[in-house]
Length: 161
Ligand SMILES: [Ca+2]
Image 1 (cartoon, rainbow, N blue to C red):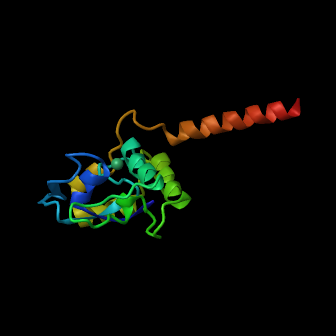
Image 2 (image 1 turned 135 degrees about the horizontal axis):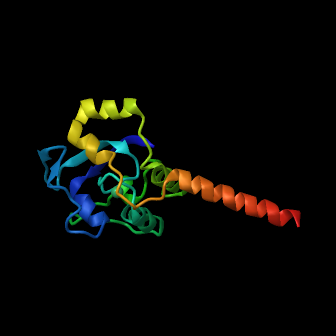
Image 3 (image 1 turned 90 degrees about the vertical axis):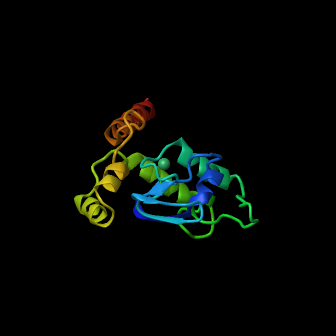
């Protein structure tokens, strides 16, 4: 679920109906709305805040429902902020699969090699930001598995009656 995400910085405010999602700094550098931000990290983290939240789902949902983002110069936003996380030109179940997988896996221990790659490429601050789960925001994957097992057991019991 890791990969490259590239967005036009100014598109962030547009996509999130926000006045503060567009970055002023990125990776320790000052950036303007006209800069393209490229990050290797968790796919589907569309606002680059290090976690998959309702805000990221909001952008995908809006795109799926047909929202078209038009910049002030009349051009149309394409790519991740238009809900096309997979880059195949459409907003569909594959994009939802990616964001769901990212949502379910965040908070688990990242693969060391990937962390070290990112540390070498982008520095300690980036790694800390990218892999710090928000406390209490997400159910643990282990808990979800137990819930799923419980549901399966209940279904099995009902069928036997
Ligand atoms: Ca996010």
